[in-house]
Length: 236
Ligand code: MN
Image 1 (spheres, rainbow, N blue to C red):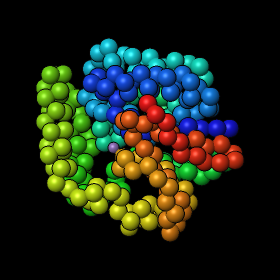
Image 2: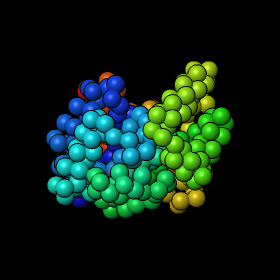
Image 3: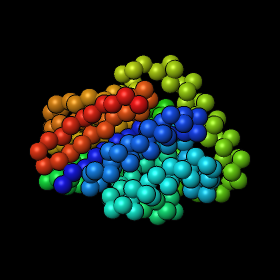
Image 4: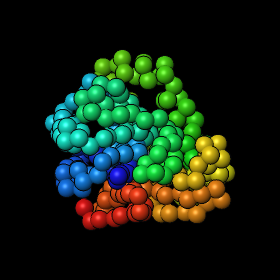
């Protein structure tokens, strides 16, 4: 039994180097595990399963080839790609999992999250999140034509970039009380999440918290088997 976990790849048409690294990773690394978990922000942006270009088609093929080879693929929404839908998952053979989800991986009880809901000091972001995660907002957005969706998504990203510039790094990290709370509420002793781009292992009051890294100059992944859990960094 073995599993591999990644998050925050932020794949985008403007970064062909990341797509290539992802393709190599899936073919050479992910294929040697039983399961691959993608804990959010696979894509830098996602405006609906009905929008396709060469880039999205290529990424879907990479994932589909993986699942066709018999690897289980689990996908969680991130704050960037929360509009990934049923039809995307069906097409690539992925199982969409809730945030948070508690699972047994290699005989270990593991709580999986994207991580953005732990950053409660970022009040502006949490307000924004509650707006765009609303069912009605998502339905209305997905009804708009593609060009309008591209515009809205771009302006939301621009606003977030401007806002984030002025935020302290503490505000954009997890809140300790939120972390404690999630351990307690889920009766968890091992939490794995991404989002903050601060890959590290933490000993918390209620257990161990492992933060996955984002993909940029390096790629990060976590491996779990019956013997150990290992956070790995490699050059892209
Ligand atoms: Mn994120």
